[in-house]
Length: 83
Image (cartoon, rainbow, N blue to C red; front, side):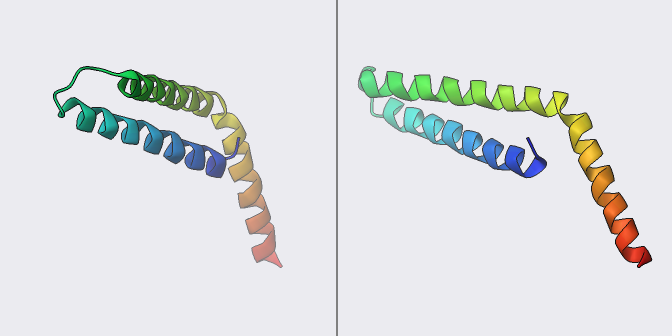
């Protein structure tokens, strides 16, 4: 996974989690009991938090690949400037 792919997925999962939190807060202020929509929002929010946790796990273990990619880009940039 590249840094750009990680950033894009992280933004999508974070947006999904935040929208579910907003839905739960708005539905919770209505004063009614929990219905199927609330449980579905809660399940979606938990899945989004699990997705964010997995992305952070992947980020930690793919860091050396990203460092190699940055070193390769820096090498190409250095060679281009020498021309």
